[in-house]
Length: 244
Image (cartoon, rainbow, N blue to C red; front, side, top):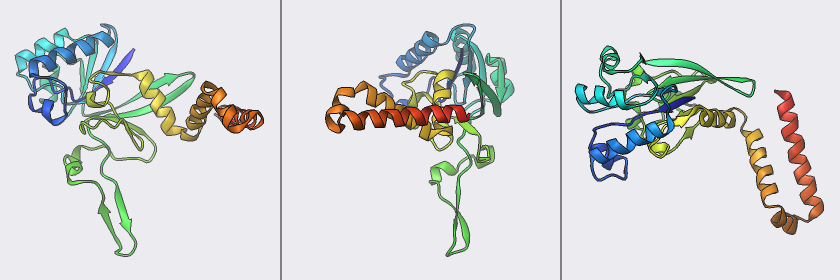
């Protein structure tokens, strides 16, 4: 099993208030994050930590990493120590950014991994004939560290502490978006499919809703219209799958 997480901020008191985490103390937060990690991640699993792992001293960080299950790969974040130091403390691999492939049902999905979201989008203003950054000032930090959007790749990232999981072709894996727990590769792939084929997955959601609430829709639409809508959605879904 492969897992992803980010921005745990072990030992960081201010993150409790900043991210509205439900803890009275750093000690309580550290225990909960550790338990959530080990409940999901097994010793032989692989976990990618997309930055900002710990604010504790070297001794306590090393001891913590020894308690956490899995083969641990760090994608370096702005609050992490130097890569060689993070290796000394217990991470098995450390990268500034990384590319991986995940397989599901005969399909291969490519992901870029970075602590940071894509570099800010720029918008061209025709009237003024200039390009202007349209992200907030908060998003303009660490531009030299950011992966450039190639228009195709799906990026897994942290850094934002947002509860929003998906924005464009970016998937946020930070604990604040995932109930303070790691997220599995299966969940990531499902989100990726929705990014790649949004109309297909909207149709699948609609068909599921139609079937789950059959009596309600037959009452509202009538049997004939219900049957036509159901058949139309099934036909569209089957055709899109064959097109793959």
